[in-house]
Length: 306
Image 1: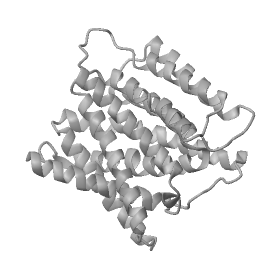
Image 2 (image 1 turned 90 degrees about the vertical axis):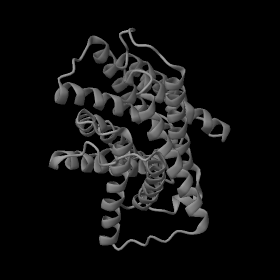
Image 3 (image 1 turned 45 degrees about the horizontal axis):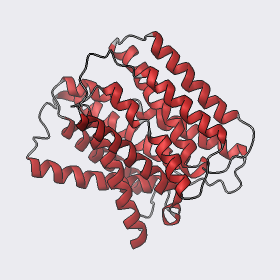
Image 4 (image 1 turned 135 degrees about the horizontal axis):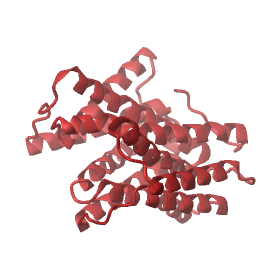
């Protein structure tokens, strides 16, 4: 995948960044399409995460070899890539663990704090979003509140809330580091994704070994492996690579706002694939979030990388 830059902040280049951000949210939102059938078969979250990462590394590594891409990185780049891999893996792990303590809708809402966290972190770095971006951030968050509204019968546990916030913070730091690290900017989106995922494989392998997790338990038949490959390709390889592209072109804050396509896609997948109902709250939430995205993309003014 070619690394695209946007030094001038032109609208044609920015539109590629917005498109990449939308692809990121949509592909990541496909997680339930592949993960839910596996979980119904009794496959553990730890196994799903392990095979999701290791298959993604094998597929992406094969693609890089086919493309004859150079895997070499210097020591400074390697350290940055290890940090990125740690943050990305931590975000995935914390989110899946949070599902054990609080409703998934609540966890989704808390995790979607990450665009706000990205904007706050960028402000500490003296990069200030425009008022249009702030409007988009808070409107999309309001939309996610409608999308994830609970029936009020489920008990909240502080551990689940803390894990969800940790997932959001890790993801926000991942996005900011891609945007701000000059050494990372010299690495292609594909190679960056590869090393991030390799770090995840190492971490999840070590965790499985320490906890003596039976990784193959519940994985039976061709359908299980097809779902694992689907997880490895769409919400892992494609989503991570396009996130890196979007962050580099339109900036960390705008790219994070486009992540709203994740819960929207997940809800639509639930309705079409698993027969889940679409309530008036969901319709309102989708209208709010889509309106905010269109407003941010079409707003006049500067298109700096923030």
